Image (cartoon, one colour):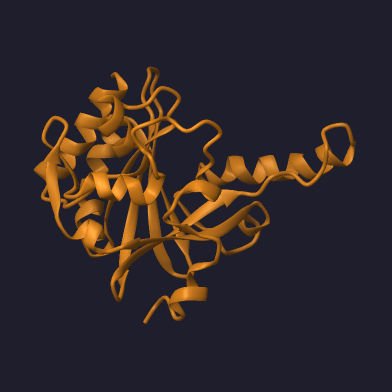
Length: 226
């Protein structure tokens, strides 16, 4: 299954099951700029409102029967990302489905990032530090549910906040092969990527994505479970 066929398959499954979602992040950027998933992209990015999570869970048996492993990332009691990892040979990508929640005029979702190693490879301590971390990461991707703020996951992952004006997600439009995307996707891409029409050398999502705030969600939102 090609990467673009994989994108069509998951989107058709969600649409036919009545799940409201939209193409997001690097997948949206690739389709808007190049008409395909970008070379070197590591996953397919989809998003939806967290209120539709129950609808998403109903299609997971079909996802698993297709040959994907399903895992869920949870932060302080809230599921925020479903990761579908292909267990079959071919060019398939992981599929990330992010769950957004509302806070006044914004939509938000936690974003995790694997913290860089603090030691040089030239020092033996690099391997003493890196080996247990690698084990943690291998366990991480195999567990069905991971609470990222709990030990031992918190040793490797830092939590940031994706913070997007909710107007971008209020309406969708049919885009590229009749797939849903934010209605004003060009303005949305400018918000996220700046001059999105031109590839940016050395672009790094944690530092350069206009939607990412370098704080944990509760620093802006307060009580996440209210």
